[in-house]
Length: 141
Image 1: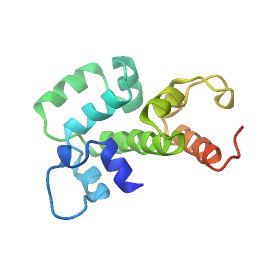
Image 2: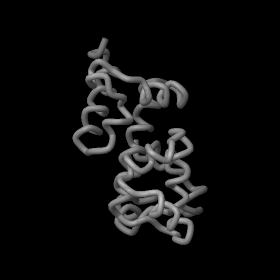
Image 3: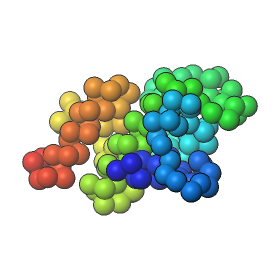
Image 4: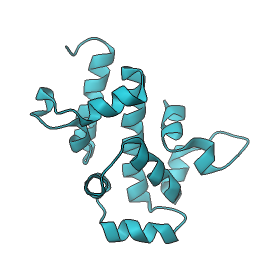
């Protein structure tokens, strides 16, 4: 799953060539490359409002990222949360298109909210993750 998360964040194209595996914990602690944010935003086709809500930042803050090489650790952690769930959804639903469609579809299991809306908090992300595992193992109908 670690490799899938790294691929969702842009992989070697974003993190640079190297001989060994990329340590995600180290990368988050020092701050992910700002380009990883662009990769996730594009992959999920996020609107500016969704970006603000999911990453808990403002438009002005995101505009300042153009001048920086790395994000701060807290935002990096939120970005990894999005990448982790996107990678899991792609594995369970067997395609990027199916995963994004499911993440954007309101669900009765989430009281009419979309999985993407729940991903603003760790608890919400856990609910989305649990639902995906239930789907993978045939528990969810």
